Image 1 (cartoon, helix red, strand yellow):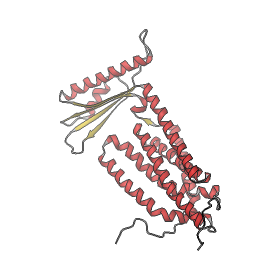
Image 2: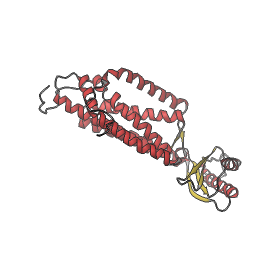
Image 3: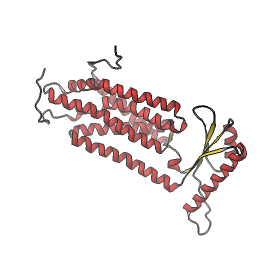
Length: 326
């Protein structure tokens, strides 16, 4: 006996729920846009610039003492996070220091050079303070210094990468199907990206370079889910020439429902394990992926497919011979 997450031959009337889903999606999108405007994104060091220093010690590290030692250096906004390895045998802390800027420039020195020197000096001060607190046995695992020019370039390239991914998906669907399909798929993709960005604005999770990779992965995953449903819709358009479009869409979604849910659930299981055991560094990426998988599955069923009803798909677009209508 085999366990099935979704029974065969389901007959759920998804298209009847399209208006409620449209209201729900519109509320999420409006809320996301408002959150982005009101709160903004909590950019990490990759996009803001600054210094990240990760140090480890064999003895327990008191976050309060580390925070007091670093905050007393007068380097602006400082964030300290604790990290424990999987075996629990070693403790580590990550210290984030904001981008250093120099207001009174020495004569003959440009702003970028002065800021870079201030950044390097801040790194040295933090390391000295940590070594004085933790002792010479302290292990420096990683030091990242990101300047304002690099961080601004990363923001621009990240936005371009997401925009190009969506544009290429639009062309792919347009050539493979009809424009109605491509419009539905792109609206669903934009829906997923905007709501994911809104989630980061509401939760104020660190928005780092890895999150751009997560968003691009979500775009590909959501598109794959949508294409599976659209392929079945295209097959059924050839097969059932007289069936009402709403019934045909419901049939197509139900026929692919088991595959959709099994793919989503198995992916979520891996992501949940990664979120639990992957540590602080991967947590933002995995949470973005989990949220994106949930939203992408929802949009492929309740956004992309019902939009075909609004745009109208021609019944005679395929020149393939039709099977007999039952």
